[in-house]
Amino acid sequence: MHTRIPSSALYISQSLLLLYLTLTQKKSTMYISNLQHFLNEQGNIPSEMPYEGREMAGFLALIVDAATIGYPNPEPQTVIKCINKECKGTLNVKVDTRDGFIFWKCNTCREEGRISDWQKTKWDNRKL
Ligand SMILES: [Zn+2]
Image (cartoon, rainbow, N blue to C red; front, side, top):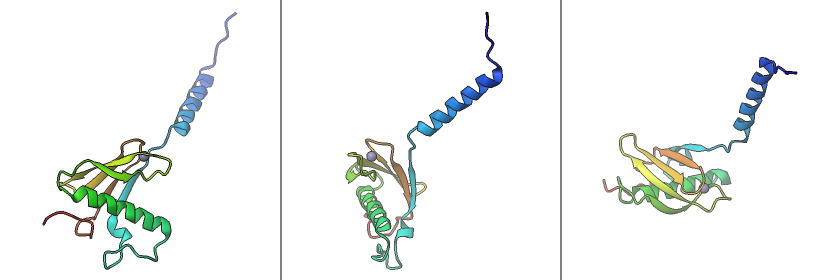
């Protein structure tokens, strides 16, 4: 006795497996941020901005501050806590002088991001 599995059934089971893998895989987040979007005309973080926005702006400002000390080769390890509240990691930073991006990445989880338009903000420590 030999049972043949129809190829369509095999195909469906493979598709379901792929779907399962896609759904259960931990998503990594890449935060793409333009610092100017968090600032008012005076270059400050507006006090009327909702809490989450101010929290994010403060987080980005800390990164720009750390990444521009010793620019263009900042100390990669910072003491900035990960944006993921359940994570105990700290951030590593680096700058891309060609595109003007600051990259940050948690040393423990998969959170990471890229900051643009930070130049000449209050947290830019470059000696120009
Ligand atoms: Zn983390």
